[in-house]
Length: 270
Image (cartoon, rainbow, N blue to C red):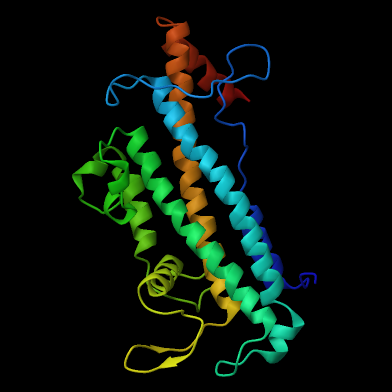
């Protein structure tokens, strides 16, 4: 089964492939071979060195690489089944689902849960980089990026942008990217965890639910995945820049400002 070559499918694939990670980006080589530093710890966790902080971020970056590989598989398979001829011809909000519909929802749900993990990783990266000392098991992204929360004082502008997106009101009448995708995805995930499958019809005292068409769900998840990945790229770039700056400082402690000025000047000239 191949993916039909139409505007909607091309748009979804483009959003998926806009996200890309270099698996070796956070590797620290220690000689002229392909060997790199596997790990680095300090005796007292809060007394970090710039290397130990970078290695902590590397752990999360490597997790991102692994997670992104799995998310892409799920999203592409979800698109393949969601856009199949069988599903389009047989989908009904009330009848029993076809095999293609079952597989479509399976891969959609798989991608949804893994995409939700990206938001937690985003919050963890900000906490590490900006020295927010919270137990990693108690880092909740909705709280970390909440406006006026004193813990995000060092990155309040980024936090404001992220939180604004998280609380965006639902609007599917705009094109091409819908509004309120994260709230939709989050509600769907919470329903799956705490109540019942959002992909079955329910008209009862327990819940009133009509399933969402697979391609509609998929589009919203893909757009949320794309947005969180862009937010992640911003903090990753900051982490890498900070590491390079500290590394240069160890090599050229007195000439660092001159080096930075020359690099900036050369970029402006080029």
